[in-house]
Image (tube, rainbow, N blue to C red):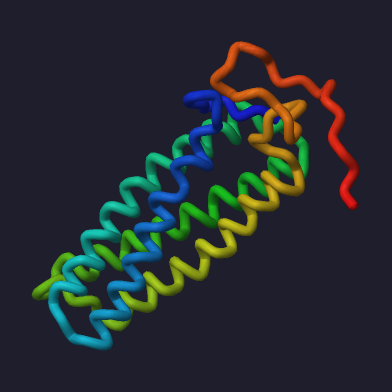
Length: 171
């Protein structure tokens, strides 16, 4: 199933997902550093990295929802798993967003215990959301070019991908 939201011949959603996921994971890392060192710069950085991660997460989410609406066939398991993937990752953004709001009012952007728990829970939930995304791509072929194979031409070329190439059997 070919993604509808594309750039340079590739689906945009899997390209973008690395940014919010990386930022939100990094924020949790800064939280740990803050807890170990009590350096205010780590708390400040964690809060601001969360803000960037949530904002990019909203953009990334929009591309995923568009693909789900426009490309994933209705009545399929992929449609159901895609819906769960979207809701789980929306929950991630909500958890981190609340964590950020709790920090915003604190002196030095210090994280309360609740803000930390929400961020860490958000990261755990993101792992499950990522697994669901992997299920969509690797098990159901969502966002995979029809006729993809190891010798397919570049997506930037003018030749369409075809299934005529012979793919060697696995040993």
